Amino acid sequence: MTRTKQLKGLCSRCQGPIEFPALSIGLTARCPHCGRPTELLLAPPLADTSVSRKIVAWTVTGVLVTALGIAAPLIGLKFLRMKAAERRANQPAAAIPVGTATSSNPPSRGD
Image 1 (cartoon, helix red, strand yellow):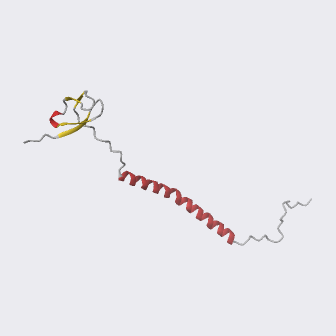
Image 2 (tube, helix red, strand yellow):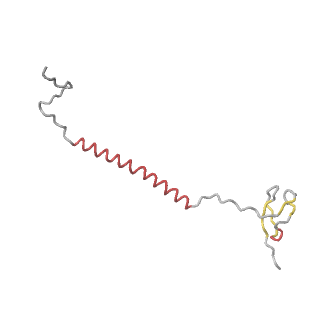
Image 3 (cartoon, rainbow, N blue to C red):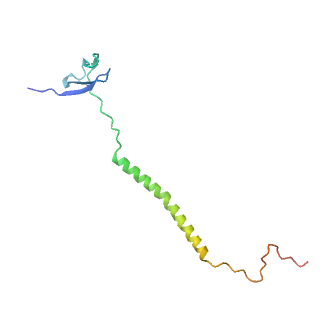
């Protein structure tokens, strides 16, 4: 005894599930739910809405590389500014030679 494979489809009117023999595909039959004639077709496959792991991994990698590309120069600049300030603080104050005019008035020429 040969057993016919059963397929599953949807009614084109009410979208109700219909199970039918594989040999009946493409024929018209009455929907058991709404009673209207419908063509026996396979139900469309469900759309895969999940995001692949590969896409997630590359996105995370890209975000990390971008963040490091922005953060590294900023950290480097901060470090260099700290070193420059440290050097300025450790240098002795520049001595002003004796006899140099310190007033804001320029020396007058012999009138």
